[in-house]
Image (cartoon, rainbow, N blue to C red; front, side):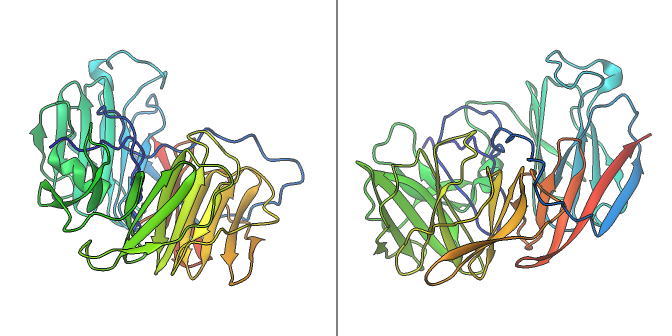
Length: 374
């Protein structure tokens, strides 16, 4: 069985986002959109962080900025892979191999882990719970089930190894060449068809969001959806309000019982997306007052969505009759927000720094993490 590979960044949220795309190994993360233009002079001033954790790390100064990833508020990793020019495509010199660091106290301290294959043309890092996955092309995948204590190697192949599938969520779409695609469940390291397929024409996306399994499709410009609270044994159709033009990309996200459908024109599109909030059905949510382009949208629960962009950060609250936008002036602005499984908000900045936002709903305490190479 050849599954549909997912090239987008899987946010590793309590609400898993799954979308279908191309079929190469590539970077399976959902990449942030193309950076939006810089903020206008009249943009609200962001608040300073509540705490700055500035920590010296055992990495030479000639290394480029790291890729930082967190599995929850405490467990995180930093991968340094290039010296000098970060855009270089040739293999690194022997004195510039990848350096892997880990933290288990929210970035207050970092320790060095042994990277199993530090000299490679392309490095990637993925983290979820106890699991840590490293890709070192062309050598292979290196998989740890004990937070980097030990690794086992999987060779490069046309399909990523079974361990990578766990990052794509319990429920996925399958398979290459099949029309229509099928909803499958990951059981162990195998993909198995669910007991009943959703009654959704033009199936495009499936996700476990807000405690429910949601499937959405599009055919001839019309959207349809179905929801199951019984692990796909039974499905209930849900009406979806007509879109303002069929979206090229559909995502389903959720948190604390909320389920949202997000439609956009495609990767790199920073215009405000089409929104639906789904319960018994999926009405459109219009948001007047948001000042500019959008970098990320993250569900917070209780009818709230966090939004970031070059003009600032804020919270969208969806009531019974209308939605409204409130500027919260978080220190994160144009960063791409992610929701970690424990409810923490996480963002990585282009300068290699990272942000952790703890708390509930829109009330967040922001910590800036700065790794200083020595």
